[in-house]
Length: 130
Image (cartoon, rainbow, N blue to C red; front, side):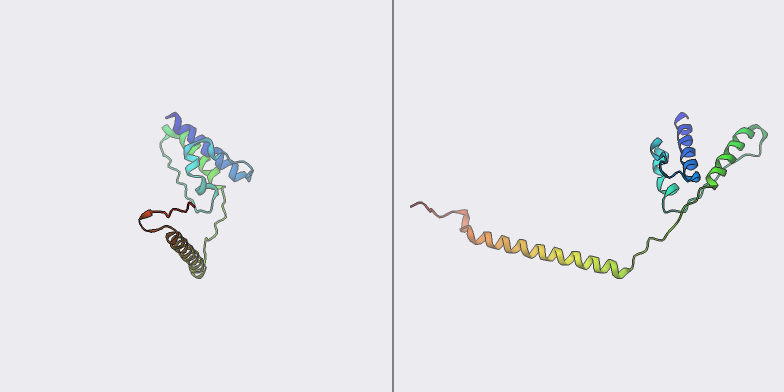
């Protein structure tokens, strides 16, 4: 129970910091939950928060706190931008990588062929002593 409350407090601190525009320091590292929600809260995402409240008079205090919490979250605005790259850019990049790898394989084959010529068959070396 205490860890959940601590995580919710840390989440509230992050939401407050982001909603106020204090982007110099947002305490995402204060709990595991805020670390997991970092991209959803301050990143390039669309995020929905659902506040569950009760009409019962017995839970009036929790309902008010939940609505206050949801109101702070409502003030959080993120800028969503599409992460789009053209297919031709990907294809050109992959073709460049393939060409580099083919050149590397050719260089390694040439080096292996050159070293194979230097070593006599069966791994025996010639005696070069005078």
